[in-house]
Image 1: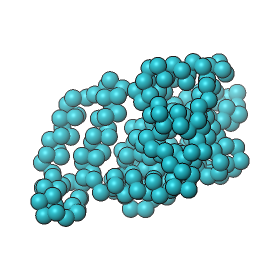
Image 2: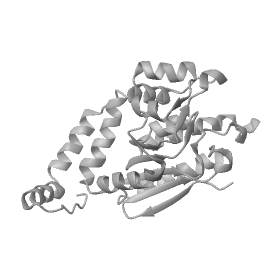
Image 3: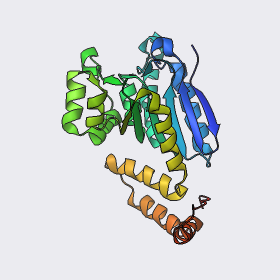
Image 4: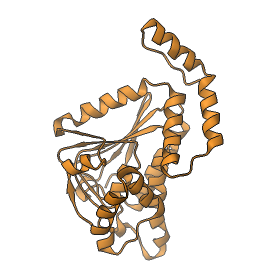
Length: 251
């Protein structure tokens, strides 16, 4: 079993899940690795986009309950902490979903800012069928991303849905043919990395807090002021007037 890996290429970081034989279930050790990778990414101010992808047929099948022993039951909370860290991480996040998304992995995907999926996708959240009560921010993500009626349908009936409905309900922000997935994700990544970092990352952060009903107005106004007084704003205006591609520095 190989742990999730991190690759950084300029402004783009890629976390890859590498346990296809187990449908990319996440063990306690996998979650610890993911948290370490997120910490590394957050400390690297040059990274603007984080892509999360998987190997094999399935994107992810959530938390591996079998990785717990009787002395470590509290570690099951680590899954929630890691998924929250993905939502809260500094860069804009893209889930590249090539196949099935099951259990807690549905929330991991919803924690990402964009979810690009192929026509091989399907999803199911079987928590109610297993007697599991979902955690606070997971419930919030389901409601804020998908709406209350859809959240109730998926969480309370444990119904499996296919790629067409995943796109219709907004779980997928983009749906493509399987052989077009990499190109679609790379196109989106390229588009995002051309944006002004202060505006891009500031708006990502505050949009997520707005979705949770936790907007910090002082922090928002501070980030707006920083962007308004930045060199990047002047560069953006000059590039627009001169009909050229801006060169942003994040300051």
